[in-house]
Image (cartoon, rainbow, N blue to C red; front, side, top):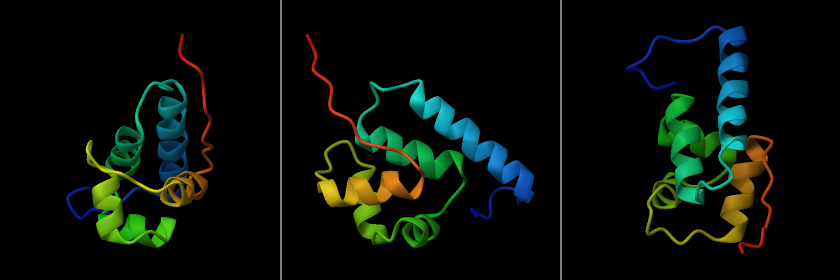
Amino acid sequence: MDKRFKALSPIEQIQKRQQVLDIIEQHPEWEIHQVAKFLRTELRLTLQEMAKITKIAPQTLQKLEQEDGNPTLQSILKLFNAFGLTVSVKRNF
């Protein structure tokens, strides 16, 4: 957990995670980099902690959070699967 914040109790961690996932679900228009950054910052994780959870290198996560990043589908799936999220494709009209 990011040292700038007070540690959350296990119950608070679960509640915060559910809240973050609910917000992401409400914003299907968000791009991958927005979801990645939102997950990490709202859950108060460092890049190293997020890397352990997702099994993605910190440098790759950092690039994934950038608007001009070009993540592989494999990296996106690792990120999303770690938090119980799925990737879907929708047609825009």
